[in-house]
Every structure is written in structure tokens, then in C-alpha cells.
Image 1: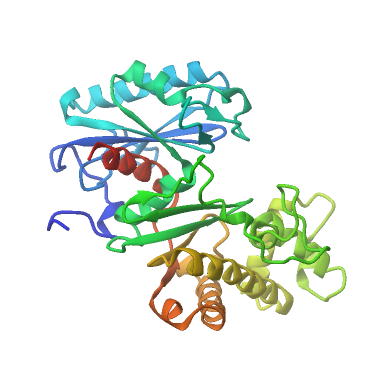
Image 2: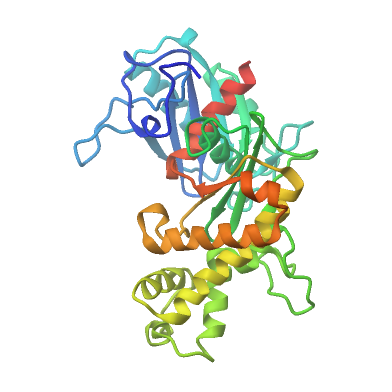
Length: 359
């Protein structure tokens, strides 16, 4: 790695154009309601946008509204990209390409988006081609989970590792897999759907959001853990029970578990550690299939991550359970850790995959 390349610490520091190394790459991270657009240099350093936040700090990304009409969305993205490059006075020849991270898959033959769950009106639209025609730069498609994984691989917690699997723990479980710098997309784009690894084959196994039973996501996603919690507090004493009202949303329950576990509630801590156990079972299947150098955990449900004693206990329990179940040689050599790029991983990784495509 070049001496002036980013490290896992430097990657979160914004750079000006003058102190950056071209060519530049643009990452576009598409969400259901907003689109994040950011610029990185050839070493993955995020570039200042030229705008200032309300807190007086430089912005790292532009945020625009997600349009339900895909052509309108492309036009908004194009306008924002051109505005950013003009404001930073970056010449066209210094831009290597754009990475477009979407919560969907793309048909490799027709280049049309396949049934994106959060953006159904974008189905069968050739988004990359439409955006490329407007911006006059090559546009590389990537699934949003694989984009985030590549960000961590390039300049995050997996920097310097040969391969990784990133599990994002949220409402569901997203997974991105990077092997020797390449995103594992699969034959038709569904590579890395590891939230649907089967960890319980019983007929009465928990029901996953996809409609099937026994999947990792049914046990370890925020929604899955919330449902397990509601079942357990009906039969076990816990301080959580008094705080669950008819108005409590399912999405709020993992936070309750987190706070009560930190406060010493026995059942809440048991739920956290049981979640770690189930997650470890899924991770072992990944280890025996891929033998990645690194497995990272990201997303909203990491119980505070490294900054929290509970997050550290959660991670330690995962490592312990993996060692009980995996081949010793694999368990002893794999790095299991938290991701560090947070919400920036998607746009940084999308830009990185555009850079990889240009090689």
C-alpha cells in the first residue's frame, strides 16, 4: 500500500481537492427516501463537498431526495454530480467513474434493475445506462450491501485483508462479500444473501420476513430479535415488560433490550448473548464456505459496538461461539470485528468499485 494511502483511522478525515490524489471517483448510495453522493480520491480519501454543515463542519456528502420516477431520479443525481464537480473545480478528465449502489440487483444481460423492494417503480429500468448518458462518465452498478463491504475492505476495518464478509444488522440482515478485491455478486446478482442462511430446520422455526422459516434474519435482525423478546417477556421476569406498551413499535424494542441489558436486566442480557450465538452459527457457515480473512459486523444493531461494554461483550460472545463450532484453523485465523465506516461505507465502497472496474 502506498505510503500516503489511507489507513483505517485516516479514512474518516475529510480532504480538500488540493491535498487529494486524482483520479477522483463518485459514489452514489441510494436509499428508499434519500440519495447520498460523495467524492473520493484514488486512495479512498473522502473529499469535502465545498459546503458547510449546520454545526460549522465541512460536508462529506450531498443528500438529495429519492424520486419514485427513475428518470427523474437520474436527472437529480446528474445535476447534483455536475454541481459538485463544478463547485470543486474538478476537470472532467480527472474523474474516473461513478459507482451506483442500489438496494437491488441488476440483470447482467438487459442491465435493468430487478424488483427493488423499496423502490418498486424503478423495476426494469436501466438506471446505470440512463445515468451514464446524463453525466458522460462510466457508471458501475453495485448492490448496496456489497458497496458497503467494499468500503470496509478498501479503507475500513478490513483494510489490508485479502477478503471479507460484512453483515449489516438492521431491520433485516444484509451481506456483502469481497474476495481478492472483487465483489461476489453471483450468476444472476443474488450472491451474498446470507441473511437467509438456514440456522434452524425445525418445522416450527421462526418465520423470516421473506416468508420462509429458520433463516438467520429471523433470529438476528432487529425485527427478529424484537419478536423473540416479546415472546420471552410473556413468560420471564424482565424490566422490559413494563416499558412495552400498545404504542411501542417493533423497531423500538431492540433499543429497549440494549438499555435494559446495560442496566443489568438478566433477561435482556440473555437475549443479546443468544443473538450472538445465533449469529455465530450463521457466521460458521460462511467461514466453512468462503474462508474469508475477515468478518465484519455493521448496521444499527451492534449494541454500541466497540464504544460500549455491551457491544464488546456481544462481539466476544460471537467469537467464543464461532470457536466452538468452526474448524480450529479457520476460527484461529479469521478476524471478527465491527465495521468502522458507518453510513459512509456505501458511497465510499460504490466509488471504490467504480475504481476497481476501471483497472
